[in-house]
Image 1 (cartoon, rainbow, N blue to C red):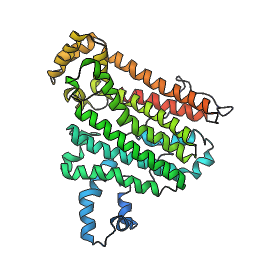
Image 2: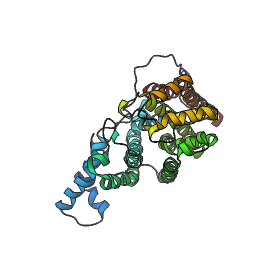
Image 3: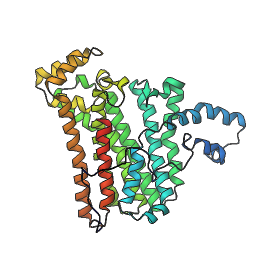
Image 4: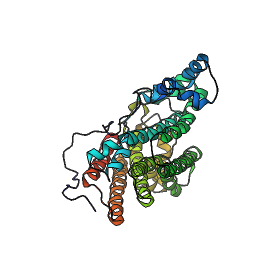
Length: 373
């Protein structure tokens, strides 16, 4: 059931909002430090260390962990996952006065998701051999692989402490912990697929399945966790949290499809154009190339990729098969399906939900499509 008197989203409706931090997902900790300064300022570091320590220990930790983490989180990206936490909360509590009472919980849970994401980016860049991140040298390029790897791993565990401080009820916290742990497990399965699948050597008929599984387990899993967290803060029952998680997974897959397209057309980061293909990473573009080609045509694609960074043959192959349009159409289908399934599930649950917030969620999807692909 939708709130009465609220207008459903129209794709043509004007909006001034863009992908960025919003009032509802602003970090509750100092910008740039993502909480690392607070560890030193409020004495929490001593509790986490569990040992007496001197200024020398703190200065070493600052140089080897806290400052490198702060250098990445100071450049926060689009914060899509943070926005998703706030929006899925407001899907059930659209009264602004109510939102303010839960603002800290939403912000803290949003930071949890963003910090997990930051950790995954550090580790991904190491394992993928990527030299740039968000327009700057990747953390392992700046600080060396051992230090960056430790920082990335630490960012998988520190958010557990932040989640504990968010003020959730005991039952909510247990639910969040269980989903958190399952998300990390799935993401590592997904990364194993990315690292282990020699996509250029896979049988053509297996390429799309492997690529989609990796997208679902990595980007999809964390987006699913973000969407479910908003429902957790909103006090929704487990079936509704599971519905939100499924929506987040679907939306995350669509985001990754558009991101993979953006890498080929050079939209998001021209310096990394064709990196996914040249490094033979499983990607949506590769999946579409395999699905849209006969055996002879696919051999032509593999040959064109093998000749990178010479792009002439690849661009001719892509153009002849209109693959950019095909790839974008598949991403659009996935995006639309995510919202259709969510709306049907909400209606089937027989609970009151906000059409206005659903419209904002839908607009977020449109902005993802524009920003990435």
